[in-house]
Length: 259
Image (cartoon, rainbow, N blue to C red):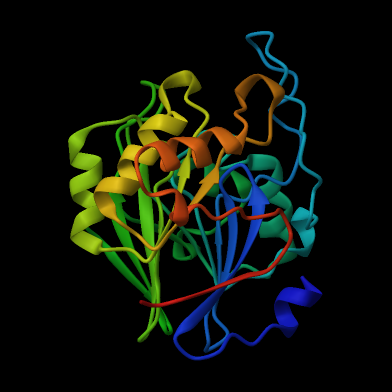
């Protein structure tokens, strides 16, 4: 958090820190801080289905140390809206607000976020946060336990658009949603298991939407829900867009700019 606080992104850029799985910290030139899907515990282990869901990525920020103007969740699954992360963050009182689709709202409330701190969003909604705009995007739910999955295009004034697809199964409407926003950079799951995009489908999405960079995510946290990111790089190469591959190392700052 000290490194994040000290970072001052240049105009027309945004700074990103990957937290593993689908967790992101995003900082704007005006200093606004956005958290997306921070999973910072080992609460998915043990798995009720007998899977190896022990945490594989180090906890880079303790939940009680989180500071942000807004924390957004793409859906209510525990590795995205984690009660054991959200509760200490709420208690510490350094999160300005909690944003997410319908089924995340109960998780926020149970974690201690007040009604005034919670905001419902949906695909097509636009939320302003200083010089940041969050555009809600379509996602196809991966199971029936949460039918309000979504993604976010995060945009800064006169700067880049960063599309976090969130967990999603493949469908043509997903690519159409991405094309509507013309993102500069996308981050998409590549793990393929449990109805998420496979590395091949993520590469097809990249080819259709045509961002400058494509970052794989949701492949690294659990041994039984993983994929080697080189498979995504290879799939991009086979589809003729291998130059778009970008690897985000957990905890290492990545600065992106507009076109």
